[in-house]
Length: 324
Image (cartoon, rainbow, N blue to C red):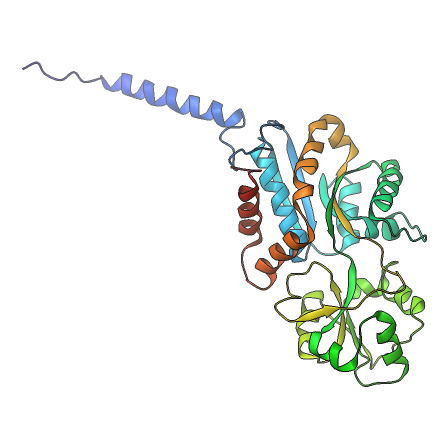
């Protein structure tokens, strides 16, 4: 029987070195990708690009931010995570100063807060086009908008609204003017100072809230507060928030049309778009999938179900075939 042949030790060492070098070169070339490719990667190759993605601190924004990171990774980009930044103005400042390259913003927020426009545009598409055109002068590019509209709203427990016969914000204003004990409102600090926030709403609906009727707290605390009707019966909420259904909360009709449309879109520094123009396809392929029922369900999985935003985002993207 012939004896088995053994490789001399130096040859084994050489093979190991060559293998290590090959692995290192593959890593340097952008492979393997942290997220498996899907339909977006078949259209967009961002290998070699390093992109920083930001987002605000509430559930919807974190989910959108994590979605963007996963999709970009699937196209070969290296992505820096800057999700969960507190305050709209802080995230916007990070974008315009170049600290981040992109984040999801809402048309109504940009129109009032960043572009300082006082006119009200009720049509979502007209507002988007106006915002996109105006913001181009700030070197900010708006990608395609989502179908969902996460407008501000005034929330109340459904059974209380039925008992008090409150259906609109005008009904709530009448309750406040009548001095009813239920005429109380919870808002967060940002809403009190925004151009599209509390003061404009109070003026539009001709009502005044004193210190006993107005409570300021963190946005995540407002939902539980109005579900308990303590310390507030009514509160500032978001139309696509995932806690509305589980907590059996209703939103009042904005019968005087104070709140603008707040459709979301990925906003990107124009310099970044210039160097990677196919980035626009990311927004074009992702945004249409985000309808109002879908976004509320995704938010509910995080806010009410306690699931990890990154896992929720990636699970949805895989279902859509956008990533592998």
